[in-house]
Amino acid sequence: MRRRTVGVALLAAALTATVAAPAPAAPAGQKPTRAAELLGRQALPANDGWAAEGAGTTGGGAATADRVRVVRTRAELVAALGGDNATNATDATPKIVYVAGTVDGFEGPDGAPLDCADLADPEYSLPAYLAAYDPAVWGRVDPSGPLEAARVRSVANQNRQTQINVGSNTTIVGLRGARLTGLTLMIDRVANVIVRNLGFADARDCFPAWSPTDGDAGNWNSQYDQISVRRSEHVWVDHNTFTDGDNPDSAQPRYFGRPWQVHDGSLDVTHTASLVTASWNRFTGRDKLMLIGSSNTVGPDVGRLKVTVHHNLFDGDLQRLPRVRFGQVDVHENHYRLGGTGFEYALGVGVQSALFAENNFFTLADDVAPADLIHDWGGAALTERGSWVRQGDRPARPVDLLAAYNAAHDPDLGGDAGWTPTLRAAPPLPTPLVPLVVGAWSGAGRLPL
Image (cartoon, rainbow, N blue to C red; front, side):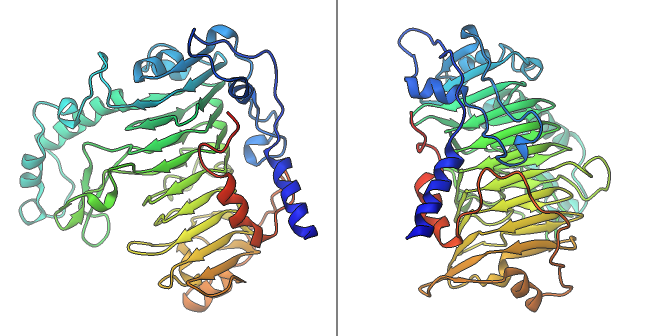
């Protein structure tokens, strides 16, 4: 009983944050509750993961009343972030944006819904693209020529519409039930951003690229993440829920014998980004989830990509939970519920990665073995300890995942990632408590609003 009491106390400490006054203003009739106002001013707690390093992450906590907005449409979201989506990434003025209801990235300037046909270049059509680049006709070389150029122009149209650029010193908070659908929050070349309490759904790509040399049979690849963090620092992503909404990958057709892939990552951290904390999020039924590091090329990513992933629920996801290159990545006290058709792996150990995994709990279907939870993507070692597994109807038990992996695969991975995390808001909970605590607190709708 004492261990459980201590665990609950540690949880309360981890969720405590410092709040600054004064409370923000909002348009008449749209004022957030006092609790929401306080939430918008919260900074990342001290020592809460890599985003707490140095000066920490405060987001838009210093915003003046004129830069505090409640938004209900895409146009209002763009306006609150600075007024012009093309230049909003350069707006470093502190700002707090409260999202109410559902904001749809496929909403036109007049509020009318758009579809993929509205964004397509006049010279692009999917039937023509499929006819031109069928491997039986085109061969297994990358597409080129007028139709591929038209697809690229179509992608540029979608970028302008559904990629929402976020500037430095910004906090975005969802009010009760808030959703962002069909869009990407692009956090690129900025610093000090907080995103909390939002539902993210269906950041779909209208114009996936055919990559005939990706794998043995080729693959369709999409490019829109739900949140993309690039070339940025001090980013806190907390208490959000990520799904494919009513457009799951399982419902997509197959072209050239391969799945038509319209979704990319939930939360990707790439292109030299660093100092990111992802906490208390819920990722449900997604395929490619969290890519940390965008290529195997040794270069600017070395010494970057420092990310903490804690107290998240990975529920029915298939891969990249996360997949890591180069970075020192601390993955602790997460709950993984995994198994079923399409599952590939949880922890991806990539080139020069330094993954530290501690006190994670894995609830597995009968068709997933502990040895399946790690995948070697060209890495050398990881530190893994305190893992527990509940498989099928069997009792939960501690499992050495690395030993299980090494017993089933060659070459072996080493057991020392070469570093020990120091930025943690509280000592780790006992692993058997993790499913209870994460299930109760992770995802949108759990914060006091």
